[in-house]
Length: 449
Image 1 (cartoon, rainbow, N blue to C red):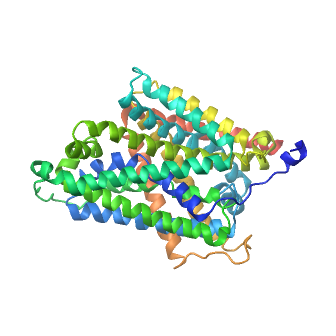
Image 2 (spheres, helix red, strand yellow):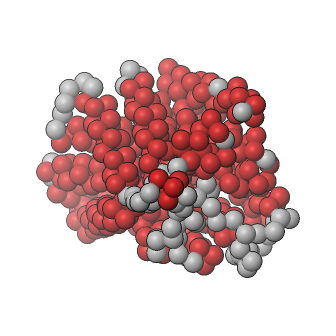
Image 3 (cartoon, rainbow, N blue to C red):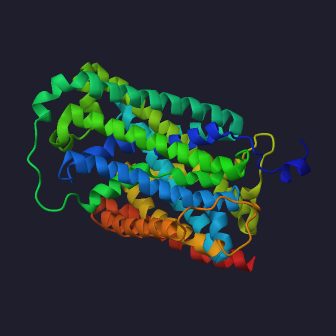
């Protein structure tokens, strides 16, 4: 391929509905479902409230997905949210979002997920005190190189990882429903109902975080075949499947451990598998969680580089990021820069007590701020002519986006409060805000150029 052809290469629509669903499921079903249930169980009053909150999390996520389906259907573009914010609010806010995503949101998420890979890989083969950070760095490098190899290779690996993850979760569900109850009877005894509110805000925070990631489908719209119909199908199919798996998995947790046993557990899936299969099940669980984290990491790296690519096309100072490699059908330069920033964050977080917790605090406030602004952009973009002549329209407008924006505002407020409550780990939130503000002088420089 000639140099001129490389410069003018564009994203190609090569992803099917099944490919997009695998991406969405792979992003959403990560390690959260192995961590969050015990925290949620300690902040609800009964089994019924516990399960209803997980169902509500799926419904709220589906409402948001419908809003994103209209945005992606009306304005399909590899830049996703960056493109929506540009059209709705102008290049200044679009630039700040792209900078936040490149330096805080997406790279912070990549580094956090990589730390989970490191934590569970260390259970299988320890490399010492800094072993988690070493595994995390290796995971970032390996997945970045996989994405540089090309979209075709990436999607097949993603499909395989997602299938392995689903099978692993189904195995945990079967263990909880079929094998563990008899052994778990002593800890699954009835617990007196708690007085006061049926649940705390912390429970909903962790449930919605566990459902988080479906918005990444916005970055697939330029590469999904027949995006107008298929992006809606991918979002709906993906979230229905995710909600069903989450409900079944939490029913299995309750059946095996009971609400009190879950609340007292630091690793509910590990305790469940241990009851069903003994200590040997711990190694199996480590493999499953590592596969889950790698699946999420692969999909997050894939979608994150697309924003950097869009940023490079619009602003001269980042022009190198805006080159699409036609041979790999991927933004190679954007992937390299994203990988380098993620490695830097892994290195920085390795000096804190809990790298994962620090990186969650680093990303959360900026993430929910721009999530809220993207939801509100639907009201503005409805007044513009869509790129597709007959786009999908979200039902029950304007109620649907109002509910979604209210959820985002609540999560923004809650994430700031959560980050502030982390003590020494709150340094992550402070650094994240500082890096976000560093985009302002870059914006002024970009406008001058």
